[in-house]
Amino acid sequence: MNRHGQSITWGTLTAPRLFTGKTKRYSYNPAVTKQFHTDEGGDKFAYTPHSLKAEIDFEAMVTADSSDFLDLSTGAAIVIAGVDGGQILASRATETWRLGQAKTASVQATHYPDMPASDGGAAGTTLSAFTPDQSASQIVRPGGRLIYSTIGLTHAAGVVHGLTLDQILEISPDDDSPDGKILGATDHGYERNIRLELLAKGDLPAIDSVLTIGGAPAHANDYRISDAQLSFEDQRGKMYVIQAVWISAFTTV
Picture 1 (cartoon, one colour):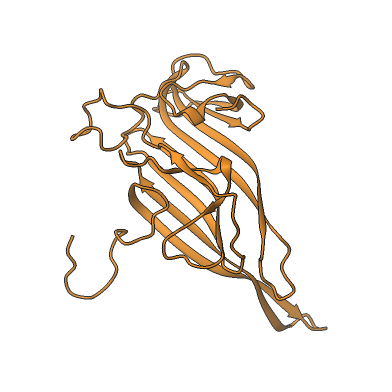
Picture 2 (cartoon, helix red, strand yellow):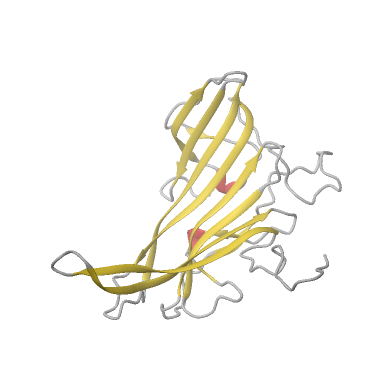
């Protein structure tokens, strides 16, 4: 890549990265809570900005080098190059497979710039997002560089058109300090959720049954189906949309 003419930052080449892959987007959005104070007539006469934090959103195309995807079951704290001071806590890590598209993964996090640094509670960086195994497929050339479409993902009820695997960790900030700063937060309530879209060929799976997806990563096992929808649309095949949940009280992955 070469730039010509005006000096600007172009593309995502120099954007911060939360895991290895081909960066699709990165955003950092600091904001305060706006509190207005009104007089006897209901007019605003003063304004207090407080609870400064920044929302972070990152997405990348999964590649053969994407072996450091976040595992939020161990904690929320992460480090991002160029984001200094305070602490960064991740609340969501998502893997997405779509028919006819390259696999992507994304992370949502919050930077608390006034929060003192502390040890412990770090997110793991050991999950491989490079699944399923598509080594026998000849559709990507050269092979073995990215995960394409839903090749290798299977389910007894139909053909996989889409799969979304979410890790969610709740972040509960402390009450503001007297001078309006967020100085601490607790991460808790880790769960995983799946949304599976199928071109129907078998029976709709039963509610509260165990969801089994062939070719999916190990952290997609032992989910319980919470929602199972069938739909008919004009000039399209019958579809199932299945949602399932996993918590640590279920079988340990």
